[in-house]
Image (cartoon, rainbow, N blue to C red; front, side, top):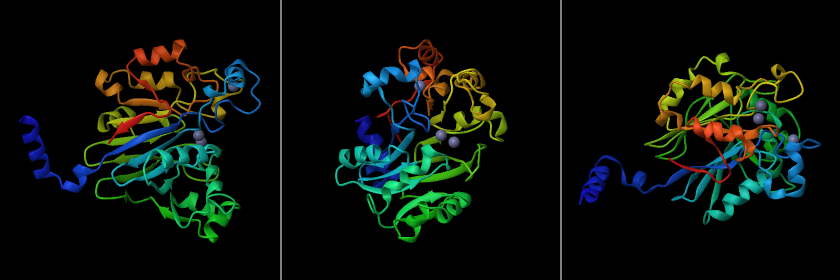
Length: 302
Ligand SMILES: [Zn+2]
Ligand SMILES: [Zn+2]
Ligand SMILES: [Zn+2]
């Protein structure tokens, strides 16, 4: 009886169209740009994958899925785009790729666009959502410029929020990163009841004007840059490739409640990151501290 009453109250306050929609975000990959294994890595981190390819991981990407309407949008076109797109295409009945949102012009985040061209999918006016510098970069450099001139893609600006339908909205925001070819953005995906933050790449939290703890308090899920676990993880100056270490992010968020910490999911792991193995002490430490490690297939209801 209480359930019936609850449904009645909901339907009084929300349009029936929104109630009928089931939307979620699905993680399509968790690795840093170069993937896992990384090309030419002779070390232990990638050696096991030579013998057991099932351990490999796709490059970090997420999809926003509106199951009711059989449509989905992919965030970042990775070198694993074919696998990632096909996964959705075949798992959702009569599905349509509604568009692609790009974060920035580093190899793991946009080079999958090559699969939209003449030699591959040959899409027609597929909407690719970008900010102005990324737009100029794609329009003025081959092979991306050919996608524009042939009409395979249509570049759409994200400086203003993008309303995908009556229930789903996407907003981009700038984050500090190595912006050689484009600006770098993170995304906020909102439904009428929940919101999710996606930041696969950012230099250091201290370089951003936004307070990370506040961001966690304001949103339901946060998929955050977990490229490196801690300082000294690679054999070159880590200041050349700045990222917030997972250990630093956990420290910054240490004073949050257990409920708030459980909203955080690390993603975008370098091949050296021990979080790629569930058996590592670091993986256990993250879970014990109340945070999450994202994995391919993870679904977060919106
Ligand atoms: Zn990246
Ligand atoms: Zn490796
Ligand atoms: Zn990057």
